[in-house]
Length: 251
Image (cartoon, helix red, strand yellow):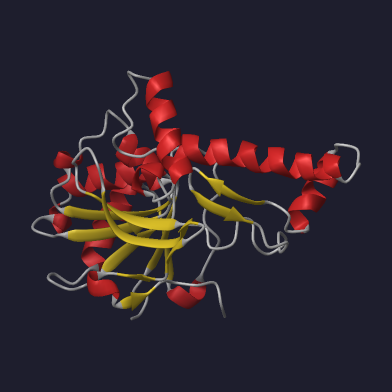
């Protein structure tokens, strides 16, 4: 229920900015991922429910975990790490063996994968993708290609709406059709319904979101699935027996 410590550190890529200072949460700047690993383990009470919210890039996660393997302060610890969508790159990297990190429980957020959805467009997308790329390993996640597919699909529909209204096809007229909320389609990543609030919502309303556990198996374990999976399928609760309400963007 409280923030114990906030860390920032010097990354290997000097072109990436350091996190903004956060004195209210007792930010500590450390000079390396080695120091970060030691300090994180020292900050966690053994046997506690402490969670590490990792907000940097996938490359730095690999560096932190590799240093945790060799840090005496981490010996005997089980560390829970929660990250964002960028962690997908770490999990999908064929050179990453999660078995090297038996001390970590890793969870990450992702946009809905079509392999987990409940609509006909998603199923057709998976079938078409497998037919087009028979040698591709898609067991872990298909979010990236499916999101790209849906982005182009949405732009196409917005352009069609502009053309129907006898408007010239420009970036401004197509964007205006998204602002007008006229794009309402079934996509490979769920139902896409733009509500016109693009200045504050950069994704469609009720966009499906997942929280996955990276177990080292070929397919991650979905712990939270929320949002509009299809026009008639909306998940508003999650967890055992659906006992927890899905998060919202309401204040």
